[in-house]
Image (cartoon, rainbow, N blue to C red; front, side, top):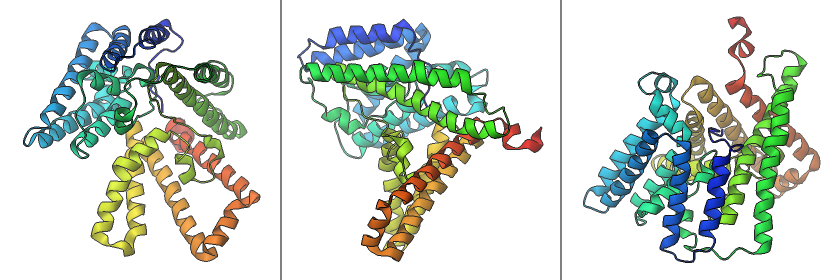
Length: 394
């Protein structure tokens, strides 16, 4: 879910964008460009945060930079992993655990973390930490640390850029062409239309917070899913468009999720950068670890366990609450069921028969409708009032 604390209707975001565009476009120096980009990102934080909040964020980024430098010393990798891993987890709990975020003592820190979209910053930091410590990639420079963790156009709703992709992007992008400029501008415009016209109209005119019972409740389930997609993908469209104009690699986050035919396919289309992060950093390592200990005969069970753990953590990443835990388990059940059903059909029909079955139009239409409804009703778990979910609580 997007952390929409950044006001895209205000002037600060767009002011920084135009300053960054004017400042970065003519720069062809690979040394100077990261510093200018870091200045733009910090300038946005200056407009977004109070002075003491900005000092906290800048201090934390500098600690990350120094700690990753220490990782090259003897035993430094263990020190870096322990320090950054424990600190990130503690800050994440302050940000996402209601008992901490709503307490008087930790609320100011939680406000700061929410303002910078710490859910996404934490995952970027985790990916950076794994890449530097496990894959032995060089630790980042100070401006690279700022630019990877706090890109202003990706703070509101991601996407979560792979640190390897960040390192592999050209230090100086190719000059903007007219077609590329028009494509990026069209992408930004599409995002603005989605968010401020389509999503806004649905939210103001049709959504009630699931407070209306009966047939309208069922209709609102569909409308809320459509609204969430429009609102969330709009932020990603704007981020990708801005990245295209600035020459900053910005991954895609959505690919027609309403056309998904099962929950596996859904997670290949929805919040793609989060799905890839979980696959890369949780699912695959855990599955391989389980297979090495249980053996290939239990590969399917190992995959099932890894999926359950991965989606449970996915739910808790959105919020450390019972609702988000249930939402994560709901999606885990959907993905596991799709995996087992695919295995069953392959054994029953054979590979060629399975391909023919998957190509049938009627099967695709029915599967797509079921998947749409499965995802739509999963959102009820985290959004509907308790009295709607459990009427006897009234």
